Image 1: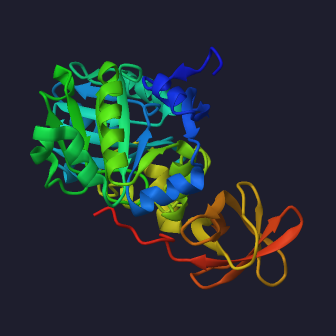
Image 2: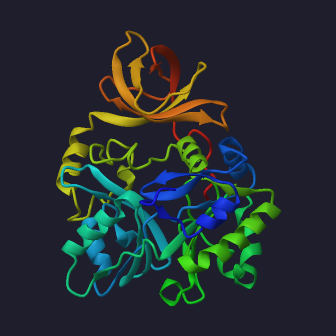
Length: 375
């Protein structure tokens, strides 16, 4: 780990587990453990896996009008949710490009928590603060709070064992609902949400960084009891790619809009104001020039980001791979790619990925590429 990288509150735990560490959004984070990415991926699909995602930002937003302020900035309509619910949303530039995607937790209209991506957290805090009305405070707690993710079909069993007497409070959580334990974050407690980014039933736990090692130990012991183990960010990436879930910097960026990326469902189109509304509305009405598509290899080979996608006939460029990997579940190469909308492509269509001069046949498939079990 170089001196300019921020260590996770669980850095010592990862070193003790012989994790391979790498840079992720300015943080030193576990990329994989000795079992390897494929084994970690598979354990999440079959049992349970525990991730450290403390590189994610944590931004409390409080004060009279806090929810209303966020609603004039971010794309999704916070009015669609109520206390104890979380929502996926985006921050866009005025031209419609995505500055970041994130989760917002609503405890009340005056008490919210925003969880942006690591590399974008400082920028989002600055933009929200510059526009905040009097009485609304935006606080960056990126280094003070930790975030853990427990994912997989046996995650509920593992979480209950780790929480002990507090397990009843999380037993019946709906998808994207959360509960605060031990007084909640403002009192040094924890927040448990039925969410995650793997496509499996799972939970995310937000708590004080100082309390994270003890929680990690309890969750890891319980996860191992159900046949799982620790998982790194490489497995998180293969899991989300199978689910056709976007990653900022790949499928979402300042040059890629929610309309192009298939994230228009996270836009409150009826809201009178949010960043980028005019540009996004115009693009939606005209139709985007490209759209995100899911691709599955029908030949031997693995697509990688940046590779050119060609039509299935004349070899003409029609798009670019944004994410590509080998799917441990499907046992073949898969990809997400931005594909031109003229001519239109649909699930079942054949395309080709140029893999360093070799043609890899792929099929356009309907997302997600494996069944979602988040609910």
